[in-house]
Length: 121
Length: 106
Image (cartoon, rainbow over all chains, first blue to last red):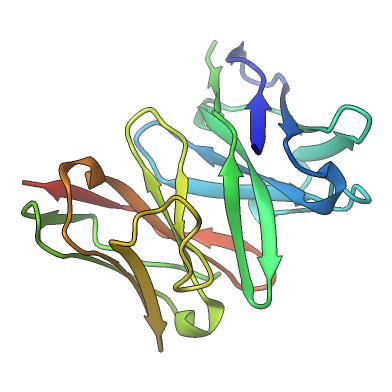
């Protein structure tokens, strides 16, 4: 079965960087990209960006451009998301999702369990 | 920037039909999808490409889209369906989520 397993919770200070991993299994890793979506406490879902597992191409929401880096390691079927210059409003649960694009539709059919990142001094 | 609008809350009695709407410019052309999220859990895809249901999702969940709106319909709503529901669409440059609708089964 398809599984996305994320790294554990982190506590960071303002100005620091965070790095979350997402290890995929149960499918051919390079066949599907991975998106990152976050959810602040009590808030809705927010798409951050995407990485192609095939060639490493990335795309990110304008809000995060210049502050987010996504990479992948095909040998371990793992993708990574680094967010820099953390602020208190970056406190959120960060999810990875398997990215599907079909015709004019794009959706996330499997999700990781989420990683809580708390930014606090 | 593209926006999707959902009602903050919808209430339904057990066994009745719940209808959750999502509106956005030309949303019908974008074949929205829907996610269910229960407290403390990751979102689960319940409808994709406007009206397709992933395997394992009960038949009582259905989606439709037309014009500037998309609709998630839950027929014969059960207590277990109480959750937050999010619509999501793609405008070829970015992925957008609606603000979410809390479904209460009274």
